[in-house]
Length: 378
View 1: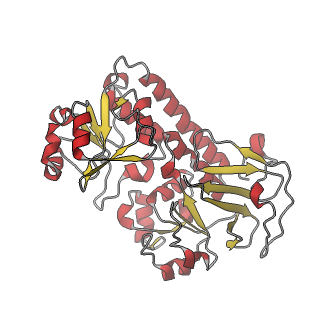
View 2: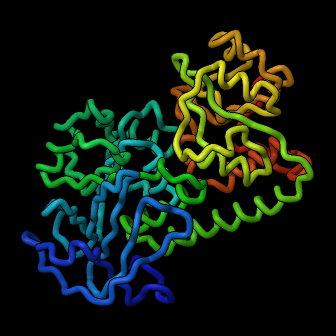
View 3: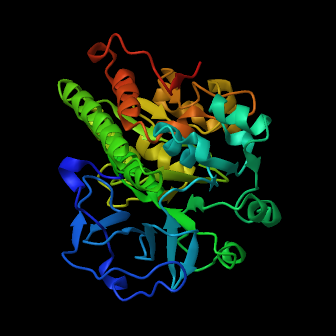
C-alpha cells in the first residue's frame, strides 16, 4: 500500500482535468468522485490529488505552468496515451539521469530499482558504484547524448530526469517506445524543505509513500529544530555565494533556495531583498561593490583552496571574507572521480545543510556538530 491506513486508506487519486482521459491499452478508467488535493507543506512543483479510484495520479509542473500527468495503477506495462504517462504499481526498472534521483530512491531503500545512470563520474554512493562495476547498473549517457539503443534494451519502467522548461523534447524516441519520462522540477523549489518533500513522489513510485512521508517529516522536524537554535544568535553575519563564470556571477536571488537557507541559519544574505527566486546575472564589479565587506563566502564550485580561487581570478582577494579565511565550499565528501555527496544527497537532507550552515555562521550554538558537506578553504 502506498499510503498509511490512518491517513489515506481510502484515498485514491485522479487529476481533474484528465477525468475523461481514455485508457485504451491495459484497463478502463474508474469514474472519478470526491477529488481532493493532498497539500504539500513546502514543495510547489508537484501535486497529488485524491479520488475514489484505484489509480494514483500525480502531476509535475514548471514555472511556465508546463504540466505532466502520471497515473500509477494496475497496468501491465508502462505506456503513454493522450499526453499522460501510465506506470505499473510494481515498478522494477528505473533509469536515473542524475545521481540525485538515485539518492531519492536510496533514501527509501529502493536502490535495487536503478538499472541505468547517466554518468558514473558523478556518483558518490559506493553501493551504486559497486552495482555499476558489477554490471547491474548501466551508463546510458547524458541528456543530449543518450545511448538510446542501450536504454531501450534495458526495458525500463521509467526514466527520471530534470524538468525541461523549454518546448524541446529530447526524449521523443523514448516516449515513442512507450517509456515514461518523469520530469523532476525539484531544482525550482525555493525552500530547502521543498526539495526534501519530493521524497513523496519517489515514495509513490516505489510503493513506499508511508516511508517517504516519515522520512520527510524527520528531515523537517530536525530542520525546524536547528532553525530554532539559530534564532538564538545575537548577531547575523553577512554572506554571499558562488563565483564568476566567464565574467558572469550567477548570484542566487533574494527569494531563492540559498537565500532562505542562509536566513534560517541566522545569516544576513547580501541580496536578501531581491525578489528573484532564480539567479541574478551580475558582473564581478557589481559583486565586489556590494559584497566586499561580507563576513562569509560560500559555494565556489570545484575550488579546493584559496589559492585555487586566486588562480581563477586575482580580484577575489579583495573580499574581506577571503582575507579573513571565512570561505567555505561544499566539497567535504568528494571521491576520486569527482562524485560529490553534496550534489547527490545533500539537497535532500536539508536538515544537515542547515546544521552545517549554523555551525559555520554560529559555531558557538552547535559546538558538537562536525560539518557534513562543507569544508573551510585554506
